[in-house]
Image (cartoon, rainbow, N blue to C red; front, top):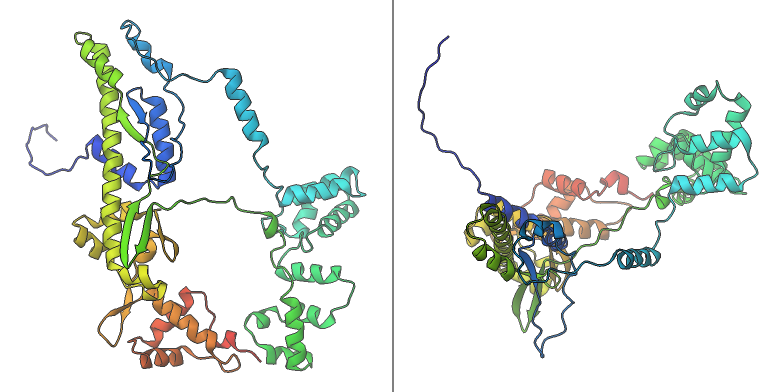
Length: 467
């Protein structure tokens, strides 16, 4: 072992803070960009929102985004310099509290979830004491579908030290009697049987199918089920129709997902055959650097602490403004190139979607493919034929007879149309679908049809067959 000094020459890329900020801003959809601007406006006293000018002939634009005022603490270091400027006024405590309270009063409340709904039924029922407490514990052991997380036997063992077997069984029965029908089941079979038992009619054939032939039913083996049960295929079909009306996920309707709102980042319009593009910035405020901070910077020369503080804030504001402008230019250039490439789609509709690779757009725009990927991530494009994710337009394809590349999504659509029009008693195999597409001028193999069919969630011909 020894110590020595040595020199080495190497290339290393170091991202400047401005470049990192530009990439971050480029990634943001318009709604997230608004939130980012509000946050920076609240933290940076050098950042101001510029009022948008409204022309008389233009349609009225939305009012500028109301953002929280800059914190007075940011100007604490500037107090020795008594400049005549008025920082944005903050709302009084009582006024802010009242407005928040009013907003809460006008906001729709969150609907009760599955467990809350079931617990309310237990409280309203004729059960009480220890059985009610056990029933609530069982409800807390249900998954989002309404099934028990653990088998009933394990639940009985877990309560055996604090409750009798009779109380545990009664509590399980209480949960299984609640609405929606089927909650408290151990598995799919148990769930379906619980729902049939609620009906006043008797369903011996349906119960027999669920108990003994659920796998055969999933595989559409109706003749086998008919043979094993000694019934006709028509009887089995009638029973299957009743079973199909049951809900395999009874708790799903009460476990609603929060609504996710999206806004188009790019608007595409077709006017007189001309495709027009604009980047949607209606609610994104226009920013500028505070002239007050510029004046403070000039007047504070000689005071290193004040100068460094103000210069840092001004640079941060300038970087954000440049990043937002760069985002708009980049997104516009990409959108224009995409719309030009997909002109037939914009005019005629989804059936004219062309196969398009991200590298193709990167070459046309003269950007790196990673920049294209960042720019379109999470962004939406409003077209004359609906709202689409920008990533939707990037798809591979299959060669057709004319030498062009048919987009994969169009192949999906064509396969779906062939299956939709087939004779359900004699559905097409994947080989037959491939031959039909080949006759239509599409160069496609059977295995490619199988792959695309499975990607679209379309079952095989055996499962599509109607007896």
